[in-house]
Image 1: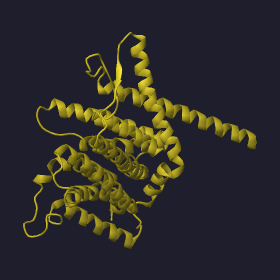
Image 2: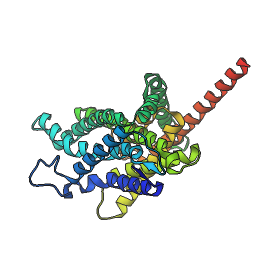
Image 3: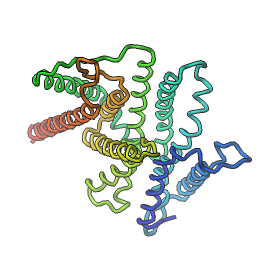
Length: 344
């Protein structure tokens, strides 16, 4: 079955918006009273229909004709909706089945986030099977050889943030000191949970979905490498932003959240495309999460109050990450030129 490019865009747009907003309205989705809620919802019906389409397209293979094969866009539709079906329907019941009883709410929430991060990683491993090209591109970004440079890059960015801010404060005569969060079990769960969640989200949004949209770009009308990248960046950043917005009055806060998360998604996506190093971007994402949750060191004044807003740390970390990516790219190009010069 083939559809025109404009219809493929409509299907993709509706699915991306649905995936981004589904978590907000999941409790209001109609369910059948006759079967288990896990398989009695419209979400499961959509996933089941897409699986049937994928099976049919795989059996028939590529058929001649105009337009885009439904089999070409089915993998990303499944990646978007199947992840929501698994996370919304399975994470909670499985977690509360194995979680210790009598935990405080904050401790339970921190452990759930670690569990959800691990669950998303396993889900991504499953979703990778729907698109071998997206998995191959993902593997190039997370293969073991990427980790040393990624870890060193994150360490350089984190050290740079505190050195720059501390140096500026000292130069301006400010009496600031670095406050470290109190070491406790809850802090460990927050650090671990946010690190797992950050890596899983980068794996899902900025690798699987991004790689699959890059593959679809030329078929959807994107001409050239740059256009294909933006065709991939914008919808994946949009669904990432919508996922992290808590809708409800007053509406100024959701709008600020949407602007921040959309911009963050775009910048992290650009970094992935520029560095092809997912551990580096995931580490940066984890550091930002720690800052937002107060689990990372922060400068405080003489009264112990935070001296700088979280946005200052986040903005500087992103700026330093882009500087590091630029320097790494310059070094790579220089080495390639020297190698070609020696070969000639």
